Length: 75
Image (cartoon, rainbow, N blue to C red; front, side):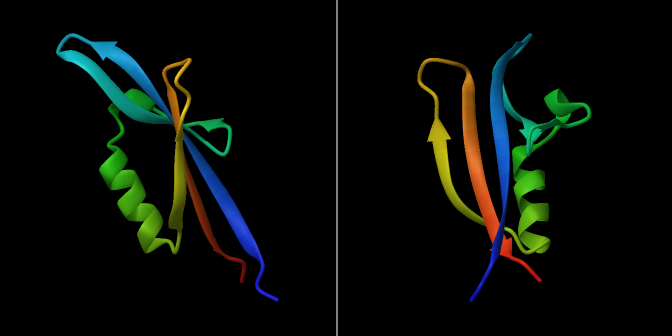
């Protein structure tokens, strides 16, 4: 039987001088270094190279948070 491992990215919206921006802040509950400078495109592209498949998203309408969920087969 196939077993899976899972990864969750928490996205956060924040204000900048040029307006609002959304960046990945947490990966599996661990804060990413310099998260306000991270590109979501580069991050999810690297996750794809590493074998992760996006399985869904969720936006918490009561906050500034969104989530992206990934899975990949366990070796």
